[in-house]
Image 1 (spheres, rainbow, N blue to C red):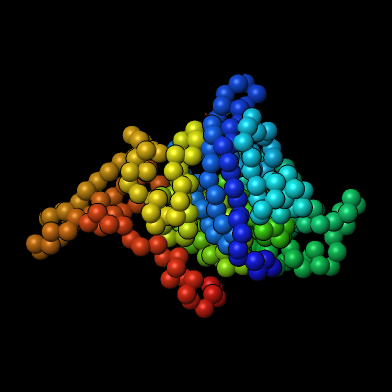
Image 2: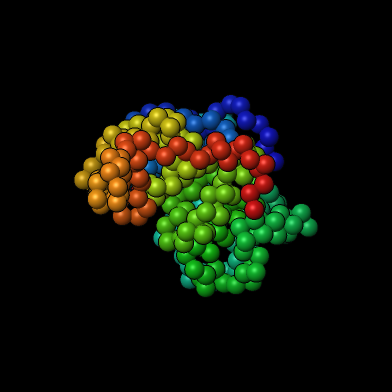
Length: 297
Ligand SMILES: Nc1ncnc2c1ncn2[C@@H]1O[C@H](COP(=O)(O)OP(=O)(O)OP(=O)(O)O)[C@@H](O)[C@H]1O
């Protein structure tokens, strides 16, 4: 396990990515996040979140700029198998006939020689990864026969089996029920305590302050980034989502039977609402969690 907490996790500096059709999806994007932390990548559809992931993974060339991972050039970190990617559901061919346990074993390929014969250790790591996402009972199922949330957990298990220090998760909560989302959030918290670096793209605004240490707002570039405490603000949400967000302010008789003057503001992109109480938002729970015994069940 990674015990190291110091040093930088991911540094993206002035990155520009242009697709082959000439469309520049990201221009001069920059942000940094340290080791042992979780950052949310927040932005509307088409803002460039997946493009950023693909650029970090080396799937797309950079027109300019640099990316460094764990204090080394991204290429080197990728070659050392230090980065795992959990793709969006739409990017996977679910008709491909493959068993759950074989998907997770793919996470071990980078550790095997070209014959790809799993060792006892590889099998043990796959078993542990499946157990950690509560999918052991499904190991001999075809991946295409699972629910959306179960598929996500299998791909998360593949990332765990890879034993990489960095995990990129593209929309891990889309199509996932609340219990599964909570399990995934707990697991990410455990991984953070192990010193891993996690970048999570999400539309699920309500959960960001609960588990993300850093927020990165994307809109064709990085328009704001920093600690969630200070960066996950109404102004930045507005800047990132513009008219796509809906606001409700509840107060008076709508909210209270008594004379309580306090009001609640709800900001939502219709997935999970983000609630501000009397102009102040709920304090992130992450620190409280960290102070616990670290034994999330
Ligand atoms: N292969 C491609 N060729 C050309 N343009 C592309 C390609 N893939 C994406 N784009 C464009 O790049 C921009 C950013 O897309 P990207 O997929 O990174 O957005 P996103 O923030 O991940 O959105 P979503 O929330 O829908 O996943 C969009 O305008 C999109 O149309």
